[in-house]
Picture 1 (cartoon, rainbow, N blue to C red):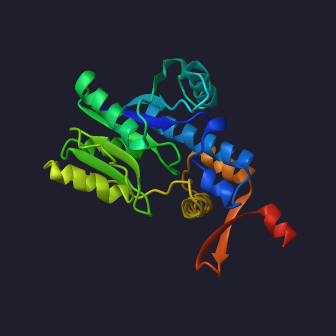
Picture 2: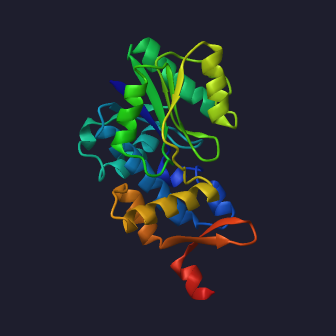
Picture 3: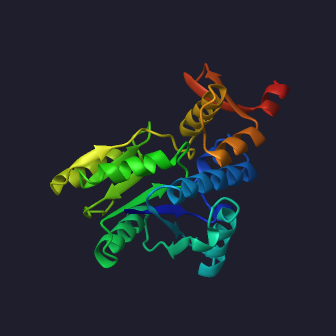
Length: 254
């Protein structure tokens, strides 16, 4: 059984979707709503899997520990099947790489779990099958990574620690693979999933969610509901040669 730590920020204090706000893709309130939705779906996927859910929350500067924990717990309470049974632990470390390393190393070496993993709360379209697939892969290889289309990771699972110093340096997928193979650990990979933390990732998430709904396939409940509530959609961006996220309100004004 894998202990899976979802890396969570207090939704109202997170900067995880700051690029979307800075680039005018989403307003701040909408970014908070979207982060809350993906956080909920990530935790639900882990809770309903064969793994153990650990909500690993960050305490932003200027916020008290108990306030940060309560903010995250309040956001998750409506979504979890057993909110009172959820385990919360604070992240420790000055950088994201350090916080991930401290969490994984503590679980493996201090708590003695067989395998430990971290999940980025901004991942979209995460389902319990992904979590269970990762656990199966960790029986054969010491490191299992879930890539994003941009070369980052949404999941990182370990049977053995690696050198975590700056281990998430971009592109994190390559950096973590290099650290694992340098330590003679085997590496396997999961399905590529987007994170909603940048415009390209959000565009992919919206397209995949809308398309799966059109085809009658399952989608994570809270993210799909938020995309619908925000009226997010995607069209071709002729100037950038990619995709542009817009809302129905944007279309109405054009």
